[in-house]
Image (tube, rainbow, N blue to C red; front, side, top):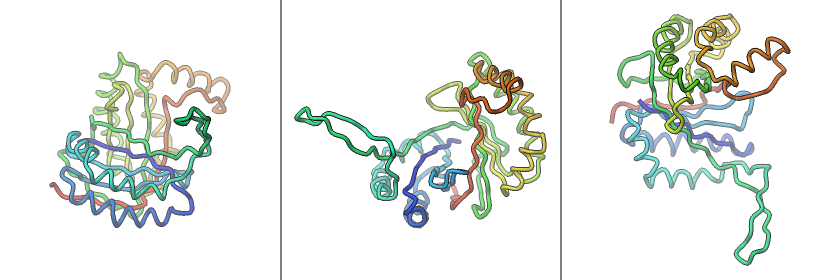
Length: 254
């Protein structure tokens, strides 16, 4: 199984229109695309105009075939009208060697991950998008600890999470471009269930079981936080992000 994340920053005036476009055009296109098991639009918390188009595929090749197809390019062109302009500015030389100053468009970012461990067998992936909630945990693992981390995740983390109320799906995914970059994706029946897991001590308990595999920078950060408190900001090697499911659809095998 393969996951593709397309990060988008929308113009706040067009968020409702983009949701309609996603439901009418994007989901329709994915429904007829070979290998696409699920497509969903998820919204960042607390950044209300930051979204991710999450797609789940049978294989990496099918996802890449879609990406290079004319269908993806056409949808991208239609979506441009909804995207935000960055507050950053770019300076470049024109053809006649004069400086030009202009706003930089907020281009979507595509990230690709291979699923290395999951809590269900096969390619079954059925979701009701009405109230579901996603936690995305980004991790940088020591290169000499990658195999141990994957083993611990499969043998300890997944069985523990399967017994937690409201936890529907669990995925450990590995970056296509960076061997030691992972994200743990958990999908919950509701935000309440995810919050109870996070605040009830179980998240910290599970983190302790695998923290020795984390990058040296993050381990150093953890030791400093114990001494100086959580105000310290040093690295994004370990980051938890929360997303509401705005809309989405599961598809049968194609």
